[in-house]
Image (cartoon, rainbow, N blue to C red):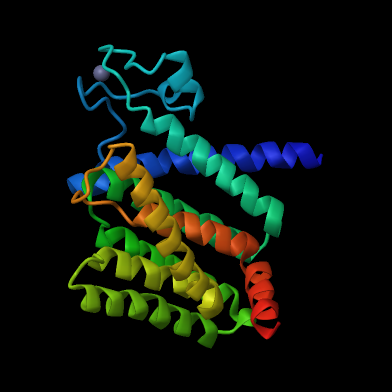
Amino acid sequence: MEILLYILIFLFGTIIGSFVNVVIHRIPRKESIVYPPSHCPKCGHELKTIDLIPILSYILLKGRCRYCGEKISVRYPIVEVLAGIVFLIIYYKFGLDFKAFSYMFLSSILIAVSFIDIEHKIIPNKIILVGFIGGIFFRILMSNYGFMDYIIGLILGGGILLLISLISGGEMGGGDIKLMALIGFFIGWKLTILVLFLSVIIGALGGIILVALKIKGRKDYIPFAPYISIAWLISILYGYEMLNYYIKFIRG
Ligand SMILES: [Zn+2]
């Protein structure tokens, strides 16, 4: 039975991923996410249910539009698989409670924001706002976890990046600051500090690798949201172990 649940969680993730794909495509283009129904961006043909099955449709259609043959971005199956895997990992670690659902929700937001940041170099306010509405909803459902910890996480997450931005003269985008505040609101202040720390390290490493491979030039914009998202996932999975290890280490 357990294996069936894993399969269902993965499928649930891919369906959410499929919706995240719509968000990634439409929000930066200022289009509604509900109307018109899904269609091919090239020929405009409306897509049927059979064209919209996560992962499977892409494979069966060999990555092309059924109607005009236009190539479909490989981003579609990637986002679907990614959401499925992240949901699986969250379920494996946390089970199925409000905390797990809050992390599944936030991971969907982070996937959307990361891919938009890579493609358009922006983090849309609309998505951050939806994130905060969800955050308030989960904080109320999870009132047994307290509130203060998460308010401090919000202020700390946004505040430290704002400070870095002021000191560095705007290296850090406003979107990153809001995104970090949102993450703080979901994970509390301790893990927020870890996410900040890890994202700077992972971001620096990623930047060096991208420049070394000549994918990015030294002066190019390097999106930070993907690094924050990776740091967030590591922190919710191993954060408390890492913090405990660190405290033991500095105490000798
Ligand atoms: Zn088409």
